[in-house]
Structure formats: C-alpha cells, structure tokens
Length: 523
Figure 1 (cartoon, rainbow, N blue to C red):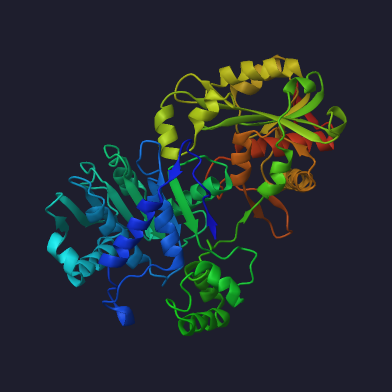
Figure 2: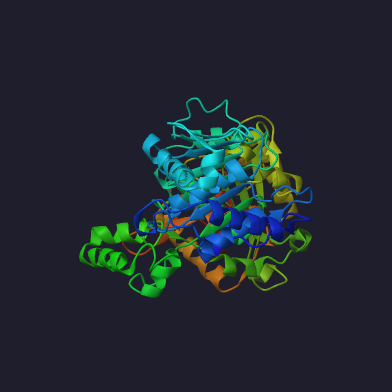
C-alpha cells in the first residue's frame, strides 16, 4: 500500500472526536445494499475506518479539514461503490453544510448513477435517514439544511454553475477527458472545506486523466510534490511482485476473503494463467497494476543519494559539457552542465541545471498542470521569459553568460529543433554539437547516466525540478535491449533529464564530433 504520511501543512492537528464521529455516523446510519449483506449495518473494514479517520480527523489551524481531495486506488470487487455512497451521505447529511451540493461523477450517466443509487437504497433502508432525506428520481434532498446529492455524467455540459461541497468520482480510469473533472473541481472554490473523493481501479499506463492523477498522487506520496490538501491511498501489487503469489493478491485487495471471495479470485487467476490476454486484464483489474510495456527509469531512493546541496561557485572555471533541451512552444526548456569527476571536489559527476518557462498565464499553468512552477520560480529553480512562448533570445543571453562562468567544452542540442538560437550561440564562439534523440545517439549515454545514479556517483544538489523530471522519465526499449527516454510515454516534463543525458554522454565520450560549419558539429 502506498499512502500519504501525516499532513505537511504547518499547524495541522488531529481531531480524534471528529474522526470517531464520522466513523460512527456511517456505521449507525448506513446499511449494505445487496447480496448476503443486504440490510446489514455498514461496519467499516479496518482499511475503510483508517481512511475515514484520516480524511475527517486532520484539521487546519482554523478548524476546517486539511484534506480537500482524496485519491483512492483499489482493485475491483472491494466495495468501492458502497464505500463511496456512505461517504456521500456523510457529506450531504452529517456535515451540516448549508445548501450543500454533493455530486457523483463518472465517465457515463449510468456509471455516475451507480454510487448514487446505492446511497438512495441506504436511505430507504435506514429509518433515521428516511425521516430526514427525501428521495426523488434523480436526486436526494435534505430539507433541514437544504442540501442535495445528485449524479452527473463525465460530460462538461451544465456543470459550470455548480457550487459543489462534496464530490464522489467513480472509476476515473474510464473517463475520456478532464473537462468535467476540471469543471467540478473548480466549482468547490466557494466552500470552506469541500471534499472530492476519487475512487478507481488502475487503467492503462500513460493514458488519460486517471494516469495523470495517479502519477501526481504517487509524486505526492514520494515527496516530489508538496500538496497538503491531497490524501492518497493506493492498494496495488508492485510491478516486481510475483503475481501468482496469494500474498501479493492481498496487497491490492484489502477485503480479500470477504469481497472478493477466495473462490472468485482463484477462478479469475485460473483464467489469467490460461490466457496471456486475460493476464493483463487480471493484473489491471484485480492486482491494480497500470499495465503497458513501458518502464520507469530511475529509482528515486538512489537518486536522492546525490541531493546534498552545494555552492555552484566551487565549479566555476571547471571543464564541463552541456546538454540543451528546448521547448517547442510554451513548455520548459532546460540546460544541463555536467562536470566529470576529475573536475569536482567529490570525485564524482556533478550537474547544474537551469530551466526557463514563459511567464504569461503562469497561474493557469500551475492550476491546470498541478505542478508548483510558481514556487520553483520564487525559489530560483526556474527563470521566466517574457510572453506566452519561449523567448530564445532571452535563453541565448543566459547561456552565453553561463558559458563565461564555466569552461564549456561542448553544448549538445537536439538537431531537429534550435533555429536562430544556434546562430546566436555560434556567433559567440560556443562549440555546438547536434545530438540525435534516437537509440543510436541516446542509448549509450542513457545507460551511463543510469550506471552513475545507481552507483551513487552523481551530485545534483537536490534540484527539485530535476528530481521531478527524473521521476517522470519513462524509457523505451529496442529489440537489442537498449534504452532511451520516451517523451511520448512520459506524460509530464522530462526536459532536464534529456539535457542531463546529453551532457553526461558527451562529457563521458569526449571525442570531437565531425565539423559541419563554424563551431557546429554533429555526432
């Protein structure tokens, strides 16, 4: 299980009484809606109880809840829908939010109604709730506090006038776009302590909104991104686990033996053993693994061995090799200078990385990408360029200045994209090297960087943007087993990683490439 630790919000405190009340309310008022448990009290399983206590117990200094979003990944048949229905009713009735608006949202109308339908059955089965909640064809309504609960589809239509106090997002891996998610998420702005709970099974690796939210949640758990308002719990088998081991099954199925039953699970496993095609389905739906044939590259535990900060001035005047990864329109551009072991005080590789980002629409970019660019800019890790597209003149001036501070031997860049910047840098006497991005040019330096990181021989000073890039980097493998970064599969930015691979690759080879013209060379 992967989950968030205690909140990083300063002054956060745990309200035991509020946590206990939330659990007790569900167990007193909610009942199971189907099968052999029909009409029996909803007694929370240990994992469910822990989630409810964490979400409703942690408070901000002002008394409102710390967590405003929760991301829960769990395999099929573990009672996701019933759990979501109970939380929805808790938000609608027990919170006491005046004119509260709680919604179920999913990729289709029918899917959105599943959790809502279970909640309506819970109301019908509970004498207490039946007295306080009115049931209509498409909504539940609590007259005493004017609150309601209704299902919505994944379509963005008619959602921009909402003021949601609670959201239950179901099976996010089936959502085809993020428009409805963004519309409902931004509709919570007027509420003091809104709560959106997204519950899903794993989907396809690298595809869709669910993958973006999953990847973001994992980075929050790893400490790559600081988001104190997000609570994360992921029940899943690790990719290196033996999928045939029943002990591994329990990692993704905390209710195993109750729902799903062992009999059901063993039958599904037998189908997966007999069919290679169904094995992928079994891994995704029952072991909660994001399935596809791509591989995350670097172990962040090994990466963090090089995080000790250092003063860049200790490298001034030292020989180095550069890698430049340029944004095509409006994203990050990155320059990495790599210093070989004989040039550093630590007898290992050291890298310095600079980033540039267009300054226009920064607030919208932070909100949409859910990446703290603004914090990194304030801390000096990213520089901004004027306008809404990358200003290469601005970049060129910065690169020329940096080249004067260090003994730059070569600057490698993607031969498919550079334009006027190449001319500007060439005129300043900076030796440029065209660097391909295919396996022929990238495989050897990718392997070298991996070797250096795994050996604890890289100092990067804890650059958080570079760590984010490293965590994002997915590699592609060719039939010969060679690896290279895959920008298409790496959903978020990996610019610093690519620049670092080119820089260390050229610094490790140190063979003068073929001269094209002026000070421009090609590998």
